[in-house]
Length: 265
Image (cartoon, rainbow, N blue to C red; front, side):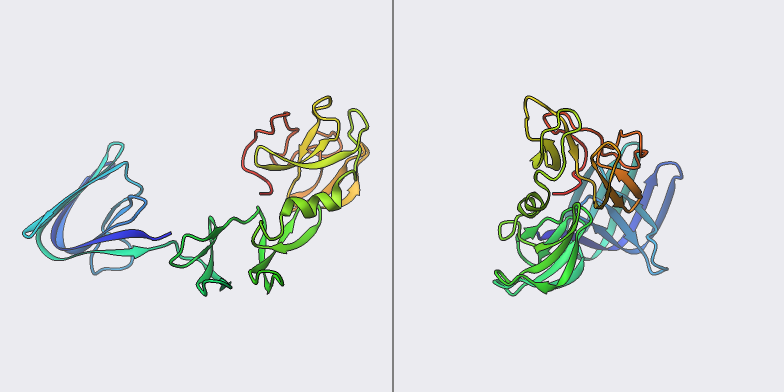
């Protein structure tokens, strides 16, 4: 998604009020980013002479003769007074990411960012499950990249969930694979509260459910549930099981499935 970076340049007085008050003057460039970070750069080195990260508020006033910028974050205040303007512009920008291919329909570049995979100059976006990695191969059906997802096994599926839903492939592999430790009924793979769970097939009569960790099943615990090999070591599906210490926040789920950040989207 395109956003805007604003740039001001000129002879400026920069004042910072905070833990270390300072005042400086010189020909500088002021950058205001979409996340409300303000940076003041001079000719020396890569570090700005003054900055305020993710300001709570920014006020900008400008005319032909100068400009004034005030950014606030708590008790910190950054002010830039432009006495003489040498430039003022706005530029479209996006988050930069690693190129991972080309969109088969639009021809736009696919990039992987912290939020998933997006298409440059487009609103097209695909989310990535936790721990997923993009593969070199492309989907035979739609042409998008394949991704590897770890959810009990290593699955290769299409990036587009509408083309090949993650839930379907995990359900096909693990539905009825384990027995509920509380009532003995077969457990099923379900999505609840944005998370993939292994839940009792007798829900709501039995509300037992566990979030699937990002790992591969390597054994069966003495409690009857699977043991997962994760990036932080082995653990039982039931993070409260006495056979294994809980190394992640994958605790037994409440029936409404509400929890923290999803393990698998």
